[in-house]
Length: 495
Picture 1 (tube, one colour):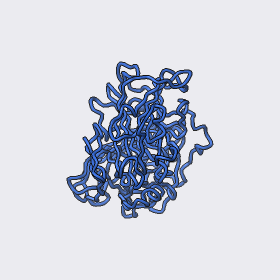
Picture 2 (cartoon, rainbow, N blue to C red):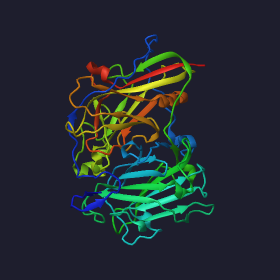
Picture 3 (cartoon, rainbow, N blue to C red):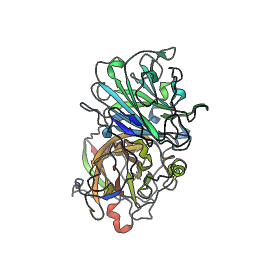
Picture 4 (cartoon, one colour):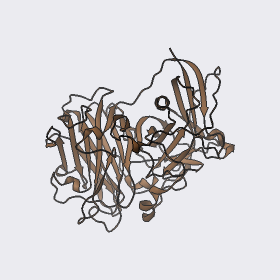
């Protein structure tokens, strides 16, 4: 398959869907869904405290390479082909004229591990005469794995490198294996399929939009006979290398986790095979509904970053590279969640952050279950264009400020915890909108155990155009209180 650049050149993208030219996201209207289960009528609704949420310690004051501080990706398992839009999502970096931002998608099946990187990059450069030693001096990506989950280089450590090019290029790939003495070249099969969008490769007269690299690593290449059992934990790090001209040296690399070093697995993140599950055995004794009570309350702060409903798909080149990533939209009455496989459309992408206080839940209880409900009132695209979205829930790594949060300074995800399908609406549903529900039991139990507020992020790994889904925020007017984000928690006494 292929897609066309703005100059009409065809670029291969392998197993991905055909990518088209940049399209603006319309604001079509939408339809129904199922309501979340009603709480037991025998329970008394709890009281929402008016105190501010307790903030966790500032991460800069802690060891960023301590295992509890390092982010993790829970990779979903699939039978057969790995669906792009249901792979786990994570990200790192920033948008600027000289810095790159990257979305990570991860999934696996019985045969192979899939890691896809979508990189926002203003100028795209590859080496016309590549060698294994110089691949990372140009636009390239490195995947670091340790299959033992250890904290030092060993025979379980692997480094896969692929440099940007117009088509899959064996001469622009390299793999090395760890040892006590460092990295050593080794020949094992893996695939790396590039794609790009913009003006032209190796030409900085005009801005590009970005590039992508899809890594497919057979488990057999890592010495395994099949996929690791569910629950297995490996080490994982990702590094993106950047060059913006022929003459100038390469620019600063970006990494996931930000503290990752290529030679020190103790600072790599974690790759967990399978999504997290939560089960609790307790006698149900309490229930609470938590949402912002009035518009000017500080409770349940939320914010949209990126391509918000009021700032979708701006096309001005100066704006998108210099201002888009630094825009604060913390008090809008609605928000957008959006992503897609065409990296050219990244000015349309949007994430949602929300924090719920949990201090009204008595201490010493067992969290039984919890649900997040958002009210959808619309979506991108005209009727018939929009597709369902698997919108994922993630836990934010740190606290954030509603007055200052932007795409560039928003906390990274600490871990992904699941998701739910959200269908497009075919017509205007009326206020408060259509309720959409996510199971956040695992996330609430984790935050409650730490004595912290629940800090959530919602984002998608969508592939199709017109993927944006529009919801009501905590800042909606008081006549639409019912539409505000709602957290419901059930707890009990351990048996």
